[in-house]
Every structure is written in C-alpha cells, then in structure tokens.
Length: 187
Ligand code: FNR
Image (cartoon, rainbow, N blue to C red; front, side):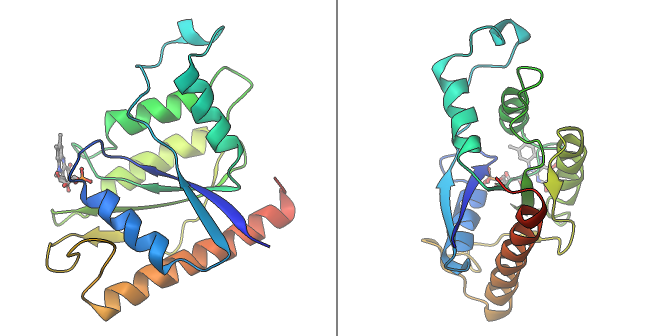
C-alpha cells in the first residue's frame, strides 16, 4: 500500500532553507510515501480559551494530522530550540484535552542550519515535546544537515551524491519505521 505523510516546515521564512530541504526529501523518498504539507503560518497563538470552539485554522490543522499516517518535521533551530511558530502548531494539535492529534503517531525529524550545530539542539527540544504528546519517534538515524547554497542549489537538487544518498536512506528508514509502528498501531 501507500502511506500518507503530513509534513511540517518549522520556518515561516519566504527563503527557508528547511523548505528547500523538504523539497529534496519529497524527491528522494520511496514511492509508497505520499506527502502533504501541513501549514502553520495561519494559526493564532494558542490559548485554552479556544478549546470550546476551535477556529477554522485549528480545525484544519487537526484534520490534516488526522488524515496522516505519519508526520515528518523539517525544522530550523531558533535560539537552541524549535521556532515558536512550530511549537504553537504542536500546542494547537495537542488540544483540546483528550483529543491530542499526535497520540501514537509515527514521526521523524530532520533540520537544516547554516551553523555548525546543525539543528541538533532544536531536535532534542522537539523530542521532549513529542514525548509528552505520546508520539512515536524514529530515533535512529538522526539527520543534522549543514546547508550551503552550493550543496542545495534549489528546486530539490543536491550536488553531493553522498548527501543525496544519506537523505534517501533516511526517508527509506522512515518508511520502514512507519510500517513497523502501523503494524502494531494501525491508523
Ligand atoms: C537562527 N539561526 C540559528 N541557527 C542555529 O544553528 N542555531 C540557532 O540556535 C539559531 N538561532 C536562530 C534564531 C533566530 C531567531 C533566527 C532567525 C535564526 C540561524 C538559522 O539556522 C538560519 O536562519 C536558517 O536559515 C533558518 O532556517 P530557515 O528559516 O531558512 O528554514
């Protein structure tokens, strides 16, 4: 069969290197994964005041996750954590209480940075958040991508074969992980 993967890009930047990385990942992913982006830029800041009556954007977010059999996070590191916009989207999805959209969801994460830490600390922050949300997480392989415009010239291209093979293997391992989780926890 095929598996429907929703993906979050953690950046709102119009020139996001993580959006560019997402294009590479969709191109090199195995054919039995289908992808839809779950937008985060249109959400108000979450408040429990919304729990009784979610706005359209919040309902759309939860519907999009509900239609996903797995979730991929492609996120930058902001100040050694995840961007507030991504945390806000996760907070929306985790509520109202008792209707947490991430419960038992197979997930994977990856990120690109211009810096030498390569989003490692953002990913550790995201792992803590997803643990509390009771998401399943692929913990190996890890993927910390150093962005240069030479390596990622645009439109999903990669100029280094080793990098391209690594990203393809990452997506292949995610597919295998999704299959394993869904065998025990179908959705
Ligand atoms: C950054 N950047 C950054 N990089 C990093 O490796 N670790 C960090 O903690 C931070 N912190 C940080 C905070 C803020 C507010 C900004 C705007 C940027 C740099 C970051 O990696 C770079 O801007 C990337 O281009 C962000 O990814 P997108 O938005 O291009 O996908």
